[in-house]
Amino acid sequence: MIRIRTMLYALACAVLCAACTPKASFVEESLDYCVAQTRRSLDMLQPYDYMMSPRNIAPGDSVWHQRPVSKELWTEGFWPGILWYAYEYSQDESILEAAKGYTEVLEFLSQQPAYDHDLGFIMFCSYGNGYRLTGDERYKDIIVATAERLAELYNPAVGTMLSWPREVPTFGGHNTIMDNMINLETLFWAAENGGRPELRDIAIAHADTTMKYHFREDGSSYHVAVYDAESGDFLRGCTHQGYADDTMWARGQSWAIYGYTMCYRFTRDPRYLEHACKVTDVYLKGLPEDMVPYWDFNDPMIPNVSRDASAAAVVASALIELSGYVGGEKGQKYLDDAKAMLASLYENYRSGDINPSFLLHSTGHRPAGSEIDYSIIYADYYYIEALLRLKNL
Image 1: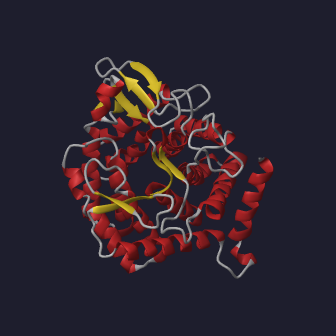
Image 2: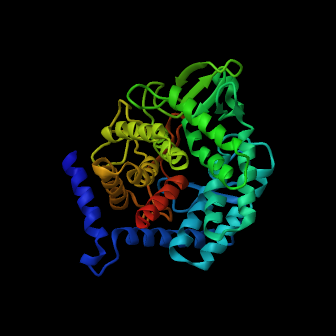
Image 3: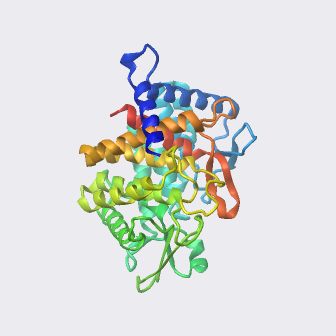
């Protein structure tokens, strides 16, 4: 396994060194690919219906399956986020106009009670990147309003935001899923950009409570933590999208890695940095040779089960950031691993001529039989984000 990882890193290094060859560097080649695929998708989607959101492409299909934008859809922020990233790299004005169109139809979500925690994913990937690149004050106001809607899900007795209000009867209590860690970015950012300071307090409480109850001794995570809504007592850890309650669902662990790295960015609390490393190390330890995880690390049918390229993309993006905070030999290892992941995704998982997405072989919700071995929009989002982070080092 070490030999294969070394080979992947050597491949990344060989093509990263633009001075050694007149060809584009590996990062530029990969980003050029992403922009080309983005343009290909935009061509297929014309005339644009901004209220239809690209979600996935099934094996054997060649066009995006789109879903109507609504409060019940959690992925509609990733496509405009991809467009913002593609514009950032290419400076293509036609991509910019599409990014604005697919972003601005989401404003209504900031003006009504949150359907669930995914509101953070939706609005920060779209409006967050839009504000970063345009400085449009309307976008900032919408992000702050979104943070207020998210805060309405916070239960002070528990110390976390409720993830799925509709699933309280199913789980028998206040449920918080690991995915919710990503949404803390909206709260932290809003508190620093005109929102109430209490939004930061909510984010910290959520991160602290999750760190206390959502992880096993080795650093692997439960997908779901269930609490008594009135007393705040932790009731149990379980899964919804993983193989079993006591297994490590790959994308859930990737959310933990990304989430605690982001928490350290906003707080510089060494507890979060230590925890980010702990949850990262158990993930890296269990990876297969090509650095892209099986959908669940403990599925007894491995290797005859699906991979999850989306988890690899999330972790690669997080590791590039985390490596800078850790520094030294360990930080360099994290950066090397991120480069190897991106090299593997490009060499072995890219869609190419098969369909207009960036990546193949993601797994959405395997226990439900949903999106198994698909191209999925959030895999593409974190893939291009990781490449841009690497380019900007």
